[in-house]
Image 1: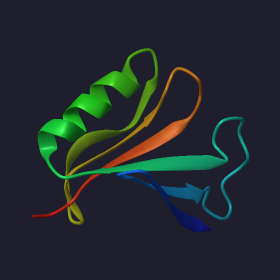
Image 2: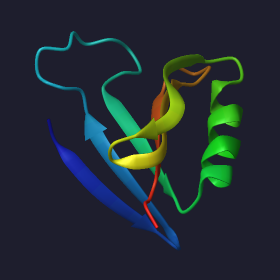
Image 3: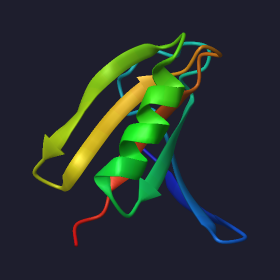
Image 4: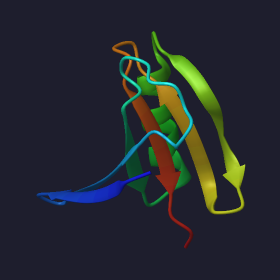
Amino acid sequence: MAHAVLKIGGAVLFVADTAPGVRFAQGKQVNICITVADKEQAQKYYEALKDGGQVDHPLQEVYFSPAYGMVTDKFGVTFQIFTQRA
């Protein structure tokens, strides 16, 4: 699995390809990870991306983030939403 961090203006995008052993599926070759500072911003992105899409992991607290979720949007692109710990 490969990872990259892209800095675009004030935004930082973390991208990763699929995990080894996962079958190729159109739109699944790259995950885009959006990192936000708080749960409220995470909720806004999550709601917008799941509209017409599919929830892959519900937005919830996990051991590495106070609000983490994964959504495949209506175009077939998978987004991970990651909230930083304070």
